[in-house]
Length: 209
Image 1 (cartoon, rainbow, N blue to C red):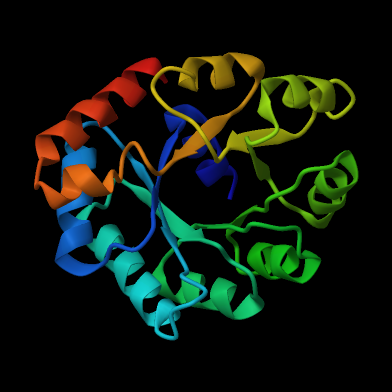
Image 2: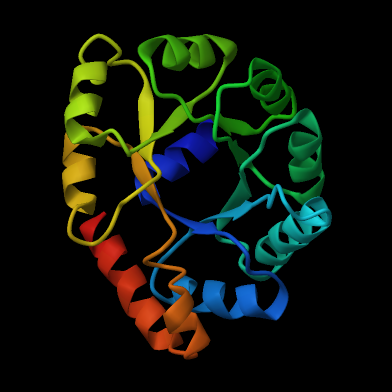
């Protein structure tokens, strides 16, 4: 687990893959990988009854075809998701909330736990349960600075609103890494088949990192 955490801290750019599977996802990951991206999260779609099958299939594909990448799951809200991630070969689980049972199951499975936490109480409760890194972003850099004063032993991952213009600011403020979705999985760009643009954007984020 410590190796995965270090990999996240060293590479800093995690692409959040939501709603793309099979060959569509393969094309996207190929373009981003060409641009230097080495981490991907495949999200469980809570509204899709086939979410576990689709997400785990995507994790397996990335693991097999891009062996130098670290891949995990996102929107992990139950222990079943954790077990499925482990079986698919994922190495970390991102959650939108602090669920102690999910955190403990993630740790027991030998995976890195990245729960969503907002308040200092949530952050420390999750940290005490074994979570390694916390997504945060919507409350802005000022809030992070306030929290990191007394809670300076915890690692944070920005997971919302990060783009090429502010990514450096997030890193300078103390975030260990960032999850990028809209800029690296731009639906319009993908619909146009402009994968060179995705590669260019990936290169920009990697250069900033």
